Length: 289
Image (cartoon, rainbow, N blue to C red):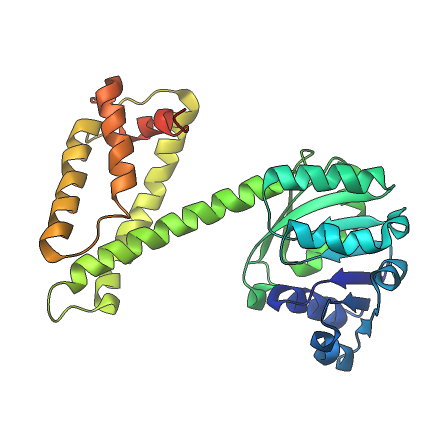
């Protein structure tokens, strides 16, 4: 299989298409705004005028569109042409959307694999770009894995089509949690005249590195359901985080980023886990009804 069709030419879609052109694939590209394809056509890509043309050009189809609605609106334009194709959907969405799309695509006689891209466009093609995949048929993934490996490190997670989306969004949640901590911590330090964010990084980076290793211990406690403290118990940590909130108020920095975890820690302490480790917060992460 030396041909591929790619739908969607946003920043990520362009990076994906460019990598396949670079690797010598006959690469057909489609975008709702055809003019976006011009730079790729100049490099050897072939422009599909219609969705049906794009589907006809290859048995391996990659979608990287704006959202789940865009995927359905695009494929609905040429539903009969889906039969016999392998659809790789790299469009960001929720697990339930992935499962619904999988069911619909399979009902049209095609194979479906959902993916999540843990990378920015410039990383595509490097081993640091990790692409998560899931789909009802592990065999279908095996047949196209070699071609997908051109984009980065491929990881097939599960036969639940929603698994890639779930893990993709969970990893992003961890990243944004890191960002929120960085912004709050930096705002606190910057409240002192003469300090710089760059200077603070010399302290923050090694500290976060050490705490990253501690996550392994927390994960083990969560898996085993044993929250015995390895140092500061929940009650002590509630007091410590409370001081972060008070210090923020004193210097006029919003505590909105830290208040949610403090609220859950308080609930855990009041719910019988005052002497437990902070990992016990996991017991209080479900939505209240």
